[in-house]
Length: 217
Image 1: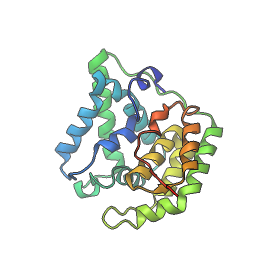
Image 2: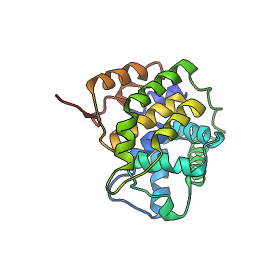
Image 3: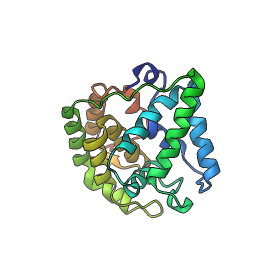
Image 4: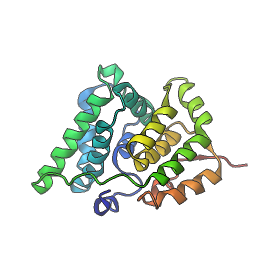
């Protein structure tokens, strides 16, 4: 993890943070989508590009197929930029994100980006998988059954990211989808997410951004 850049970025980082920038009004225009990625990568004099590049490269190096990556993108953005409507799939979209982020970094510092650090220890992956299991039923119901932003297969895709790619990224994507679909969660889950953030190398602001739909009994 590029911690020197990470601590400058606020509540979220990388691909999960990019997803949040795609919001109403919806667009199916590729030119607007690519401009949004470039604007994101340019934040903080290019600091946002580093984690974005790491996330894209990790996913592209994995065995997750394009349709499964499209599922994650649609869920994380609440369908506000529809890859299918533009005639592309997840791997192509991530390749363009990778190219934009890499170019922004090399343009800024004049050399190639540093190699990606290894993912966190396996024990953290098991902890994130446990958190997915606790909300799996509600999350699948909220995403697959939504009236106008329906997407199926979100939970299996999240599990694959955690187990096969990176627990840090899988955790951030879990939080992003929960927030995007306003899935109701218990206060205990928020506490658990706070406890996981630090060992995963994340700022607690990733959890404490006010976007959760917390059950108030």
